[in-house]
Amino acid sequence: MVTYPDIGDTNYFTNRALENKAGEKKGKIIMWRNKGEEEFHMILTCPECGEVNEKKQAFEKKPYRPNCDSCGAKFVIAKLKADKKKK
Image (spheres, rainbow, N blue to C red):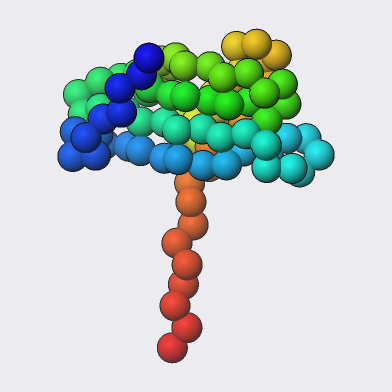
């Protein structure tokens, strides 16, 4: 079982809903990288097959593209855009 980190010990953390190919939000990813580590820790609930994958994975570049170990579906974890405030 994965132990969640203290946010102060990470240099990346995200918790997002994932859509399947039909556009339905049926999956989820919790992903983080601890300071000083190369690999990301992640818990992925695949929106395509429903399987839960707990694993570590390194990525060459952004955007990060984790995949489901069960069905092979790939997901893009793009940078979240900040809301612009209107004046």
